Image 1 (cartoon, rainbow, N blue to C red):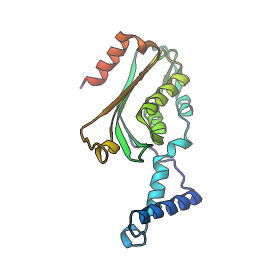
Image 2 (cartoon, rainbow, N blue to C red):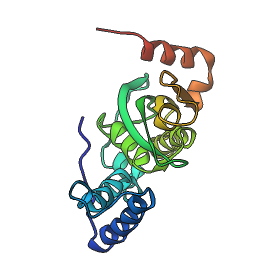
Image 3 (spheres, rainbow, N blue to C red):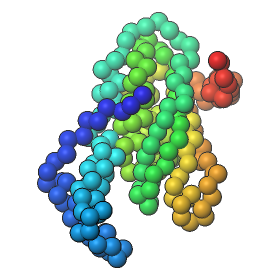
Image 4 (tube, rainbow, N blue to C red):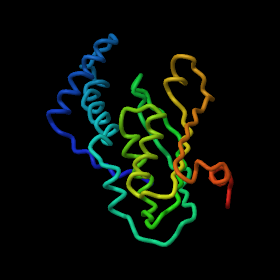
Length: 198
């Protein structure tokens, strides 16, 4: 599902970031005035604003906009949600998939809102551990369900392109609240996100 671009490019912000990107280009001994790089600082400035637009968004407000009273108390899972974020240590991308479940306690939420919550927090400078917890807490605090579970599997370009340069490594983080603290419920969730029901 494509993410709706809600970023508004403020002229002053774009100009400030463009100046800094031009300085970076000069700092690596390139010429920001040559044809191929002439518009790069502005493009990079707008790209950075797009990639960090999550700071201007409210995840709990998004969830509240589509909450519905419903007498359903079984597990709801949205899995294989693509995510793209920026590592705050190197400003390099990390990307992968998130799997989210919750057990309603009086309220359900429109299914498209779960991926939108993931976008809110992934479109920021992040570490995967914090990203996992922020998604979990926003769902827990807003829906007040019987439990929330999340697993994120991601590849980090800061490990693949630099440093140890391990291209096949995948980082997995998880977090659980409420009913998912029970081993049986947690194992059911983990089994369902790894199974192919098709």
